[in-house]
Amino acid sequence: MEEYNSYKEKVEKQHNKAIVEVVKDLYVNEDIGPSVSAKKLGIPRQAFIYFVELYDLKRLKFANSKKKTISLSRSELIQ
Image (cartoon, rainbow, N blue to C red; front, side, top):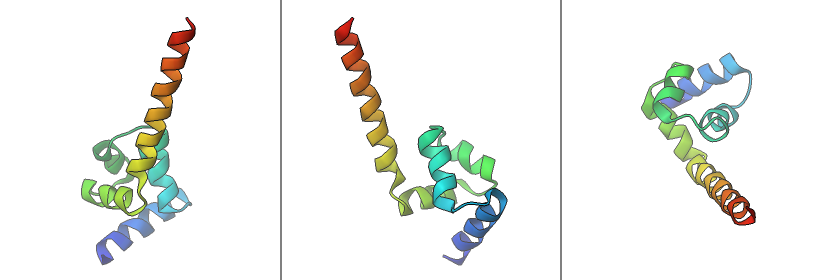
C-alpha cells in the first residue's frame, strides 16, 4: 500500500491534480489502455490498474462506451 501512495504522490505532483482526475483523463476520456497510460505516467502497469479499480473507473469507461453505441445506432436509424 505504501508503494501505491508513493506513485500517487509522484503523479499528483507531476500533473498538479488528484490521481483520480489524471487516471480518468487517460483511461476514460482519452480511451488509452493501462499499459500505455502507465508508461506515460512513469508508473508500473499494475499500479495504474490499482487506481482504475480503486476509483471504479472501468464502469465509467464502459458506461461511456454504451452511450456512444446507442448514439450511433440512433443516427443509423435516421439515415
